[in-house]
Length: 283
Image 1: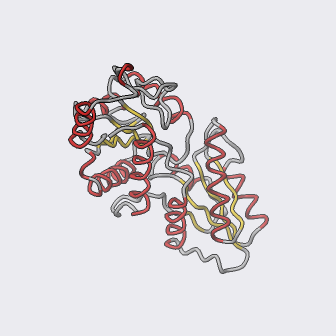
Image 2 (image 1 turned 90 degrees about the vertical axis):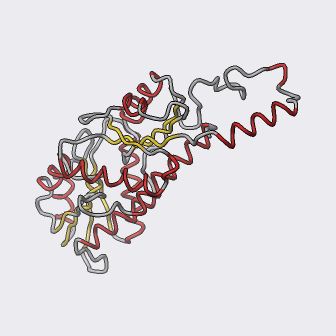
Image 3 (image 1 turned 180 degrees about the vertical axis):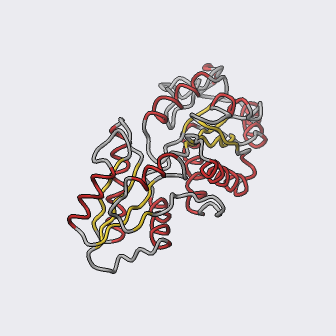
């Protein structure tokens, strides 16, 4: 399995790459040093392959494409390309195949938590490909996601100075406890930032379900807002609105079609790439 910091195709217990000459490890000659230096200075940087879940929603597709385009504009040197783990094309294999032949790749999941897709699907897909590839962490948890969540709340009219407020963070949910913990961590950080109670409600797989979380919050608090912790419009956002009966407002997802991708998200995607590239020892 290709994990963050492990360079695929290299023995993780060795500091030597494939084809290294062990007899010369301790004393490389000048020619070797110069050649390696030249290779490092002329090699193309690893490509950034941004992989999202995929959706049938035209609005969701537009919003995700805007994020990938914004990342490409911010870092045109990285050969940024997009792909999908499900629903849409190109899939992961095709996306990696489209990368420049002489370039390694860093797959950045455009996913908010590290569940099955990050730990299983993407690891399997990258392991099966001949290209030297590593997979970064999921986007969350990260304080830059809180920046966007807070912005969406303010845009919807939320004011944390008003008494009797409570927020329910609407998350997709996962059968992977690590992903569930990621979402709860974001909820706890949002509560700390805003100074009011934040609970988490899930749309699938995990509990409490969003509808139950909203009902309980309504019994405790005078005003309830649902903060949508989803990347973009689609099936789960439709479900969020349907299960938010009793809430006074429901925010938009992190990405909204027709709007520029939020700068904190663009920065976060690039930082996940740089982190993974450094750990894997890629150019």
